Image (tube, rainbow, N blue to C red; front, side, top):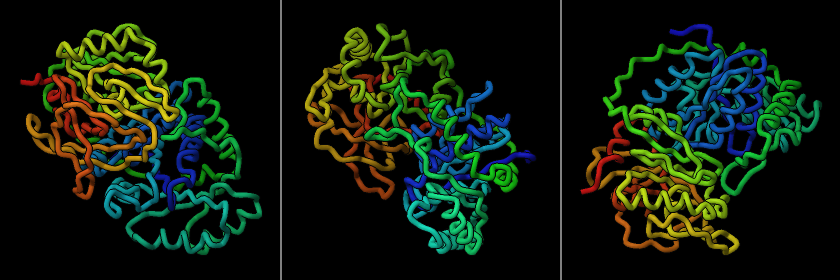
Length: 447
């Protein structure tokens, strides 16, 4: 066992309670104290992990946030990831997802399941903006619902005044949950939002924003006591044997303001096959020479004018795919490979024209949920992933669907995994951290 480590999971009764802002503030506050902090995120989120990594980077430390998801991967895989990445840190902070017990099916894959799996104490974040002593039955219910869960403390968020907090503190005491302080209402604890997630513009000062959050939280949250409650033992990282790989491939990965939705473990798997070369479809004129092109999800619709305007890059990508180059595109990447995208205001922008489809942002509803993906041939077993978008395909040509896709309840979703020549694309963001042979499938030529 690894001793002298600290770790905890920040959870909440529901989404919107302030888990992300408090996680960012605590990551930065601890890093500024000279501690090495390792962030994690429960569930399939990309944007929170991106912000976590910024918050944890201080004084030369650079710790990428890691997704822990016991629905998209096995419990053993989540344990291995936590052990491996926590080994080099003084403190590990895991941000929960949705409400504490919210999972794909009941509490399956929930924050509570992950906290128990990793033997982590849970710190509740309660939005107290519209409550006082009513926090007592709320906390009592969460403390007693599952006796095997270690609910170690609570931090109250959006508290109006110090006198307001005194009522909340009494409520916590009567519920048998230790109160670790509160976060007063403040503009410094607000993150600008896009229609899908958070603002990721390079022009925004995230580092300054997070530092202001940390300064605000340190005034009223007992961080010393929080660390005292979060001593944990972490099992030594087991030896993991991965299948042999070619190791000499070059993988071109799009990464800029338009394309930035990654699972870190997916990238680590790609590194086993060779060298990753990052490039920008927005700003670069040339596509790197590569054996595999990976276009992840992101915000191509927000950068549509610039992406469309870079006709040189669109031409290079189209030629690469039409000439049999291996390519894999997810959600935003798939939109970019299509013929065009129509924005909410009706404006239309040409894209790469590799896939015979057009997408639109007009009159659409959110599509959200876990996905099970069974390929029709050429790849054994089931892949798992997540779908989250506000666009839809408004016209689809004769594209081949090579998979049967359902949700977590085994219901058909209408989603598809398209293949055209050696290009594979889908709205689904796949997690292949535990299916490390998947890139080999992507680099297998069609008959």
